[in-house]
Length: 305
Image (cartoon, rainbow, N blue to C red; front, side, top):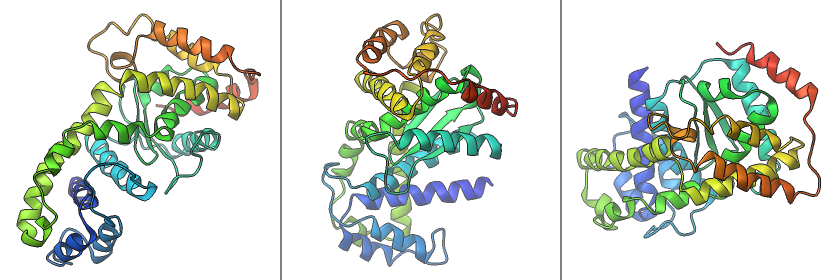
């Protein structure tokens, strides 16, 4: 299993490296890689397909490219956290998450939204570019009803919808790293040099994943995601009170420096509550909490071990 994870991780890193280089350089560099090695001919073609133009910046990244960037980051997140193997709950989270995503400003993205539960007691949720959204067991246990859970998923969908992940990556040291690589780099480097470059960029992508896990998005992005959560949840028919209820559970814990994710890195719970209340008051109609959904949520949570 560890070998498969390493191969996936390497493939994603290579794809991300090639993403920002010219298609001509990629095609020439790709030919030097062995078909029978770590990546297949199909994988090579996928890499070439995602490398259509020279990227001097992250401007105008299309949805397909965003997907491959997100998949690279998601692979690193999964190298750090094990997946919670529970098909029933995973299906439930995906149905709920995709129902919410339909009412976002980006209901259709390149490969759709994907939701996964992480085997961790941390209270956290992560949204990588391209629609890869993770929620921990610890956060699931903190939820009291489906309104809360839907609002949290809407918050993460909001990050993807507003492309906060891509904007965060633009600010990383990745651009500085790419400045030392010319368009002809892949023409000069063979498989061994490409492997060395992959290791260099592994550190850069690890920084991006670490930012999501440890620090989260910038505060302005978190406030925007809260506002989007209120709109998306209410459009879906969920009471945005769910977000307020969840934030209320955070008030006495945000000062704990040992906590991560929603508790350590996001803006203060009291400030967020204040802003969310303003957003809710601006709604023309506020959906009410549904007893049927609460019963469904409670039944699903019985399967959470």
